[in-house]
Structures are given as C-alpha cells and as structure tokens.
Image 1 (cartoon, rainbow, N blue to C red):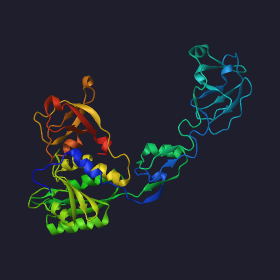
Image 2: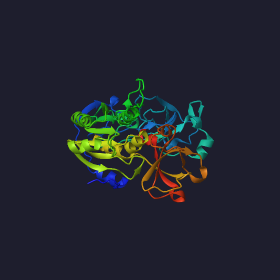
Image 3: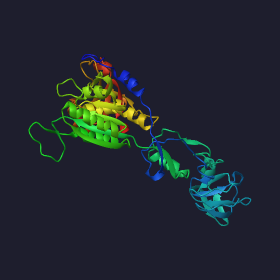
Length: 410
C-alpha cells in the first residue's frame, strides 16, 4: 500500500524493477550491414583466423634474422597485398608492402627507412643494426586479432560500429538478433498541443513527446506513438489499454502525482497493478512502475528534466534488459563537484552539470545555475548528471558520480 509520505530509495527501486526484467522477444536474421543498434540473440563464433596469415605491418623487406649483417642481401621477390609469396631463397629478402602476406620462412620485416638500396640488393643501415632488429618485428601474426573457434560476441551484445568492423573481418554476412522492442509513449495533459499548432491561452507545447521519442530511438527500439492523453479517467484507461495491446512496454509522462487531474496512477491500478510509486529522487519523485494488463508500464513525471533523469536512471536499464542486452548500465565516472549544494536533501539528487577545467583535482564538474525540473535547456547545454547522495551537502557532496550524456545516448 502506497502512502503520501513513503518514498522508495533509488537503489531499492532499481533492484525491484530490474528483478522483473526478462527478454521474451523472438529472433530474426538480418544483414550485418543493417545491424547496428541490434542485440544479438545468439553468440557469434569465428570460423576463420584474423588475420588469416602472417602479414607485414609496414612497407619494407622481409628476411631471416641470420641475414641481417650481410653486406648485400639480394631481393628475390616482390610481395604486394593480395599476392601469395614464395618461400625465401637462401640468404635473400622479399620486398614487401603493408598488409602483404609474409613468406613463411621470413622472421622479421625491416622498414624501408632502415635500408639502403645498393647494387645487387639492399643492406641494413648501421644505425638500424645498432638500435636492434628483432625476430617477429613488424609482422602481424596469423590469428593475433581473432582465432578460429573464438566466441567474438556473446548473446546480448548490442552491436555498434566497432562490432560490425570486427564481424566483417571474420566474413560474417548475417547475424541473429532479437526483434526490436516495441515501446509505446504517451504524454498526458489537456494543456498539451504539438509543435506546429498555434498556442491558445493555457496551453503549452508537448516537448516530452519528442524527448521520449528521441530517447527510445537512440536505443534502436520501435516507437509506438499513442499521442496526447487528455485529463479524463476514461480516456486515460482507454489509451493505456490500447497501448498495452500494441507494445511490449508503455512509457507515459505526467499524470502520476496526487492532483485531481492526475488519472494515470488510478488507471494503472484498475487495469493492472502498481509496484513502485514515488521515489527518493530529485527531480522525478512521482515516478510509477507497474503493469497495464500484463504489459510493463513506466509513468514518468511531467516536467521535462524529470523525464530525462528518470529515463536515464530507472527506465533505460529496464528497456535494455527487455531488449535482451546483458549490459544495461551506462558508464559513470568519479568527479569533483566544484559547487556542491549548501543544504542537504532527503532525496538523491541528479544535478545537471557541465565539465570544467580543473587539472589539480582531475575530472571536475559544475552544477548548472537553474536546476528547476521544468527547465531542460540546462541539459542541452550541459555534459551530464552529477549524483549527490541523500542527506549530504558542502564538502561531503563534492565527490560525485558523473553520468555523461554521451554514454547514455542523450
């Protein structure tokens, strides 16, 4: 039973919510070329070695160590990338280029800058010999990147550009991935109108629709736009029921507080169940989590900054888990907050901050001047969120966890 005064701590809410996250999505096969942002539904095992043969890392000459000190080393062959070399003839070298396969009996590559071309072949410059020439230098060994039979990407990996390059180097053309999670979004409030319409008295533009759509899109998920839900109980219930039938999860903004025009909480309890309500988080206290029918539901607060914070901290990891990702948390960094709050809060605070130059203290951040939950421009001009623990201020609040927007796709 939820009371007006009870607040769930952020860690407790995260643990309770994530405990219910389970991927039940079907799998499909897609072209590697169009797979960025998709999540692997099975492991990728290489059937080849990368590189497939020893090759030269530089332009130069391939030879045996025993021939380094010969006065003249004849050049017996020329090997460019894509050509198959012959074994080196006794006491000779091969002119070789970057990426070319090294003759199987060559032991090192001497870069062309360390070689003098002379009549009958080449000789190694004295300064290069003094610096030392070692067996294996400038040779990329077969399988040094990937060996045949290696599990290169595990189930649950979210594919990014760096993954695609590796998989392509293994000759992978198609991958098995989960189908995209369908995420229904809706904004509640009779005062809302979409951009492009003229504002009437008492109306505001619906910024949360675009904020939530962008947050969902950068996760590679399929958006189901329910639109604006006006402030009537019957309308709210009908819209949520429709969303539950069309999507894998529902996310709304607004309507989860205790006002007479806030109908989301009651509608969710009628249609399903409410598991979490009201967090010890600032901004974003009136967050709700539960189910509409059997579809997971997040009710985010109505203020734009609260939507951003609660999505990053609470909703995003849950969505990624439903999508099948094994890595659901963004990367955080330790930082020093140069202007910590002067008064403590009973709620854990997520301050919008920007990076500042402070070589003496390492990574340093500065809280933006206006932290009002209705102000989103401070997020647009900042670099991330600083996490200030509850009941701390001043020097005790200087050491913070920094959540970079870039790491969270914001």
